[in-house]
Image (tube, rainbow over all chains, first blue to last red):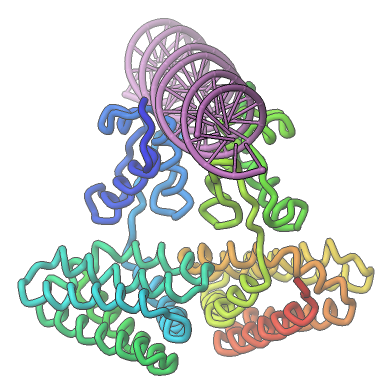
Length: 214
Length: 214
DNA sequence: TTTGGTATAATTGTATACAATTCTGAAAGG
DNA sequence: CCTTTCAGAATTGTATACAATTATACCAAA
């Protein structure tokens, strides 16, 4: 088969991760590698690679009967926010210390796009820009271990975040909170960046846990 | 080939991870899948699976020229401790809340073995029991996301931890600090467990960063 | 009816063959 | 002497064949 710059394994991983974390496959469902071979039209090799990555993130489990979907429970959600409350502020503080002008421009663009989509009532795009904003801060923190720790936690909230920003009032508040974080980072003020990020995570947690019934 | 309860891929992963994190392969070294095929006597399939797991943990990188060893730098070490300072106390607190008697017995045994090996000047065994103590607390926290976040951070300190506990005075203090954490967990006192764990991580960090020259 | 066993099917683990890209070095031309 | 080009080697990505285990279904016997 012809070679691609993005490997099939990577494509399969992203597709499966997205489908599982967005709730397309329910918790408890079982599939097999051969199911995926038929559905996705690629061989077992890239599928197995994707499966192993998902297993490492505890999103699925492989059993003798096939691949068991675990997904993300409400307890996982509480556990995740308890961790993010403690370390996502650190990411914002570090980003405030070391961000470059080019990086700041990238962060600003994601924020302004989020602010653009909020009044349009476009939850999918709002969520996309919301996620990008957080991921950029992870990256710009310059702390690889921190980014590695936060990224999987952030991804696992994906489904619940969409529900959250579908509430227009919350989407609006969230954008305002991002604006505050951005200004602190832009002024290279670590303490303010950390405080506003912690406040933001706290608000997001409260809203998501309140809205979620599972 | 005959089937094993522990897959070849898992064995290869653990061996390579251990060898890289213990410093057997220096940062910057390059190897290829075929090198490992010759050395380890298994086919590319399990080797590739192990390689991908190591890549996901940012311990190695795959390039067009082969597998590049990244290992753990002193900056990584500082970054890691900054995170552990913030969340490892949470693990201790959660463990104090929910630990069972059986789990407590397991934790006690790892502690007593550590205390047994310290006066024998046996750094390898001391480190082994030291690591086990922390990993048990991660597990007993009942917070999978937290355990998933902490375990890779903990593993990356392996090499430096051996140097640290090779100092008899530090090994002795470390065991005493573990004893304090254990007592707090045994008394189901989350606040005391968290405080003593944070203190312990802080001491470990100071000692390791002082001793490490890279 | 229930239980036990056996053959078959289903599933993952492993090895290997093949495809496509990229690196390397040497030769040719300026 | 330097640059460019081209062929071959080295490397990873992918597909597929094979091995071993485990699940399943059916049949027979108590």
